[in-house]
Image (cartoon, rainbow, N blue to C red; front, side, top):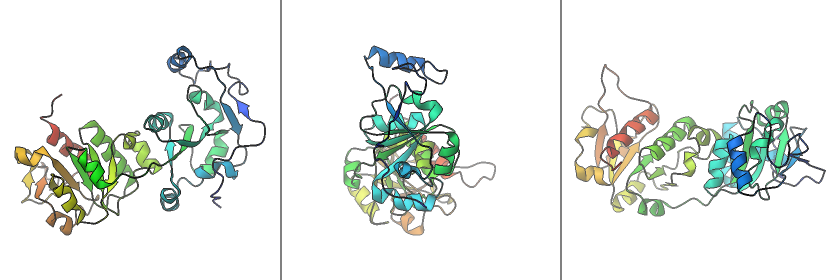
Length: 318
């Protein structure tokens, strides 16, 4: 049973520390550490011990935030209303911290606590457990060895996101977390300033989306269009040209878009398989296509997005 309370409660019992698990304070000497990072922290004058609380029971209420991480339906219904999300892997959690997301807690493989030695963990407790306990608590083998629970930030409005953007992507019904994460990563890499989501899109901060994006969901602003497809009028009113991607043979090849159509482009993409609805296409300004060869009729939505992002930005200054 998922116990929903107490995910960040302090442990009243004596805690571990980086020293107590066999690490010379304040930096790791083990092979699993990062000497360059430790050296940078040493030069910065850090000299502290991170208290690490041992977890031996997978049902311990202190790690309730991490329960049943493979249950997509349960997590997507529970995380957003409770204002939290889970980051998996050291790189991703560091990017979340740099983006200003406050940590609730950390949960790590006991052999990898040295990976947090240079972090300012603040008031967020650090919990450590064996791989077996981690797997029983989360529902999967935590091979990256590091998890963190973060507070969400208030979601920006579409108007706020549009005001600061020159090029955006709009997603309709994209509810596959892997595709969503890959689209965010492509947007960050290829010059797209923001992502707008229809009401039925998946949560960008779901663990798999965050992991696939390599933490780029924290770098690209996003918002929801609450009216659909009526919200496309809001995008158009902000000065964007809505380009609906479709494999239809009568659509305009992307290479033939005019400079005016490219200037402030809002690329509209649909879900894997069904693509854009007829209503969304009708609400767009131009229907566009990536020309295909050898009889291939379409690409995966994340791959198509990346190709289209590059095409729209190919004349950008390097």
